[in-house]
Image (tube, rainbow, N blue to C red; front, top):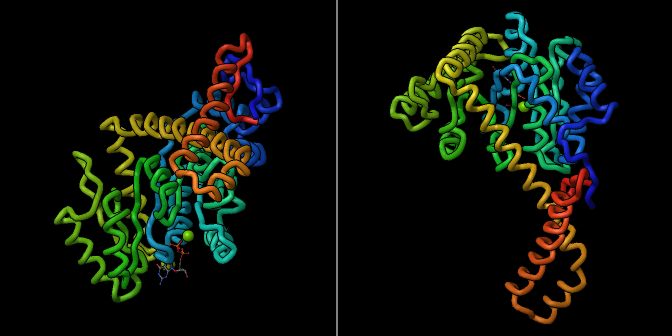
Length: 350
Ligand SMILES: Nc1nc2c(ncn2[C@@H]2O[C@H](COP(=O)(O)OP(=O)(O)O)[C@@H](O)[C@H]2O)c(=O)[nH]1
Ligand SMILES: [Mg+2]
């Protein structure tokens, strides 16, 4: 399954090098092509990442998370508008459940941000939560690297905040905005267990509704008691009210996002986060490659495993056999990759 790659990592094929140059000059088509190439770890995607890391301009990555229906996409649309007025180039990574049932929401998100679709300073990328060969978090984190390298100043990641991949993606964000809405009392309880402790900024959206006041007070109390909010010396999590549909509170929200940006730069957290997210991407790429070996090992052992189960063989034996098979394939590829003279292999890449 392996593919030879020049040992000098980062050597790009001429066509990919051209694509990167075009992307750096702002070609939307080229950026789109690169994002697709980055979705699955292989020699091409690794050489692209290796090459574009140097162009990073320290874009602020803003995670926007919260329960479905809170108004995240609508709010993101408004945040884009405000960022554009302030002269920033903006990219969005929208992560959406992609089961056939919720397909519509992906379209819906595009729709809610549609007014920016023709703006060359805005790039919106929707990623499905399922079906990406290299995994969702790899695609999302690689997209963040690409947008950072290609001159976007603000990179907004919208997720519904459930699932391990989404947690991984949120770890890559400099600034996390947790969006909630009035009447979400039970949801807030549920949220507490998860996203409520990760926010730098909390937003009660739909504040055009009268019930918003109660939600605001509840959250204000929870923040004061430090039941919610991300700990960072020097930053107290903020609470804001918005109405995305009415366009209210947007300026204040963007001011606060900017204030957090200044804070993380002053404290060195911004640069630290870039290192963290690249370390996380490296780990996720390794996991994704190892998973392919596990798949292959099981593929090769299907009959044998079925027989073993039918014959009531102990599960630990079966697991050990599959593990040995996967490890053997992996070890052979890694060894030939490191001993292969001028050619090296990235195991699992085909
Ligand atoms: N009343 C009111 N409705 C809103 C507001 N923001 C969003 N909505 C509506 O809430 C629904 C869900 O919005 P959406 O942005 O898709 O939420 P998401 O699932 O969190 O991305 C849509 O029907 C929006 O029009 C708001 O500020 N006030
Ligand atoms: Mg949405």
